[in-house]
Length: 343
Ligand SMILES: Cc1ncc(COP(=O)(O)O)c(C=O)c1O
Image (cartoon, rainbow, N blue to C red; front, side, top):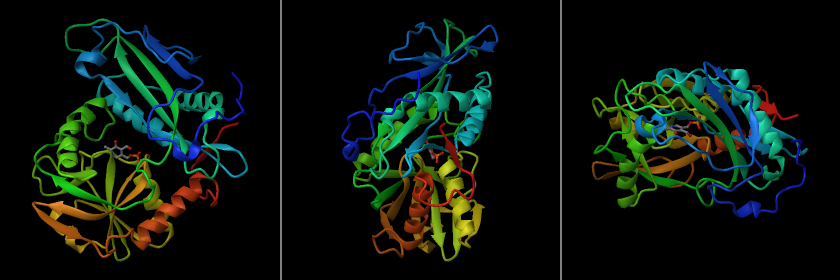
């Protein structure tokens, strides 16, 4: 399939963060110790053996990244090599055979190209979300890694994660439930973490907070991360982010740290105690979906902690957000070489 130039007729400015069917997805099959070539298919369904290890034992890993259209009409994918590396790490941890980085990149580029008509136009604030996933398939009942796997990459056009885009939110610390164990898989993007996080998610929603902050699962003393995004804090000239073995290494966080450093800030990655929050000037929840969500209040043990930003998105977080979004859409020089242009 070639580059589909005609744009799908969607209401680009009002897209939800949800699944919309596109032209096609790409699939690779692992059997007898090797991966097949990628196959573009329009079928949204997959047929699985009911005893597939992915279904019972959660042998599944996935990724999330985005493609954008630039002002010149080019399609660019943001740092796909980093997602390839992270998926490789996730796979190793749960005994899924390695997905070579080249195969990952080829698959992502091909599926984006074949769905070019679904890449939201420049200036709409929307983007094409790319979701690679790999599952252990084939019938097997005893616990053990699968013998066969399917690697799929689908895409779907999405609007901003939080309605209204860059808007401050309030968060609550979740101490009642953990999403990850100290030596578990919290640092991998595997499905089980998200199932484990659903109870904590319901907890913060029930309490009226759009996001929840998890603490370290061992001592409940240090900040880990939000349900689907990393924690960053700005204090004076410092960009502070937790160092912990149970959080997902966020590519957005890494990118923002590079931008901050370029702006002359000091990057501090260290264990961050929850008791320190009152010292911070600005706090952000960072990840692919929302880039940065400014967090202007954190409720911890019944007490509200506010930051120097006075309930508005703070200046540093606003600047970081603007710079990253401008790099992603080609409005600012890609000086760190993050954009993969789809030819
Ligand atoms: C648990 C968790 N933390 C952090 C992130 C942010 O990672 P990234 O910036 O690579 O999207 C994600 C995914 O978006 C996530 O699921």
